Length: 64
Image 1 (cartoon, helix red, strand yellow):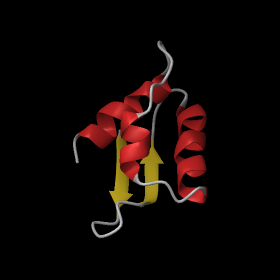
Image 2: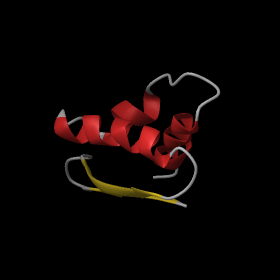
Image 3: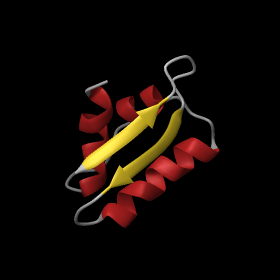
Image 4: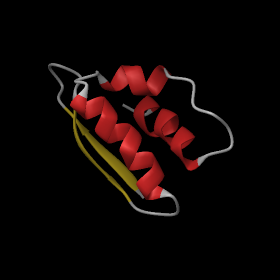
């Protein structure tokens, strides 16, 4: 189960909860985006190597 909270005005990622295999690997990508103050669209549109659990971020953020 993966959830993300996005600021509707700025498109910044305010937080995320990732539960499942390799969640630690994936949350680091979210943390980096948050520290860099990147909009969620930057993570949504980035090319993430395959096969990794982190590429699930593309899918999660594409649902917004």
